[in-house]
Length: 120
Image (cartoon, rainbow, N blue to C red; front, top):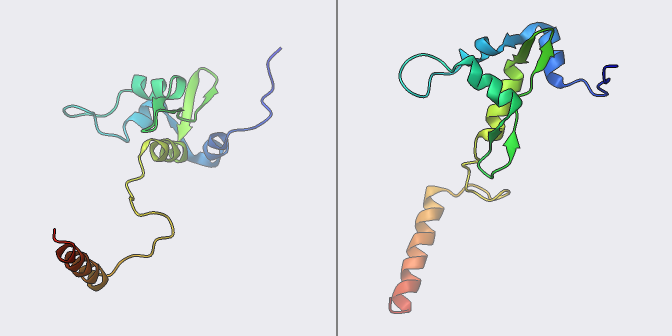
C-alpha cells in the first residue's frame, strides 16, 4: 500500500495554481556554466534527488513532486533553492545602523589622531 504523505509541499500548491515547470523548463531559466545554452535537465534532476551544498556545507534539495512519470517544480521552489545556496554577503552585523560618510571620516580622523598619540 502507498505511504500517505501527511504534509503537502508548498511546491504542489504552486503547481496546482498554474506555476508548474518541467525539469527541462526549469533548466532553461539558467544560462549554461560554460559556453552558450542552458542548464541540462539532468542537472535539475540531480538538484531534486541529490541536492547541492550550501556555503556552510549543508545540503539543500530543489523542491519537486512526481506526477505520474514526470517531475515538476515551480518558480517559487527554484527561488527558494537559489536563495538557500546563495551566501549572505552583508557583512554588517544585524541591528547596526548605517554610517554616514561624515561619521566615517570623523572616526577615521579620530583613529589617526589616536595612532599619532601612541607613536605609531
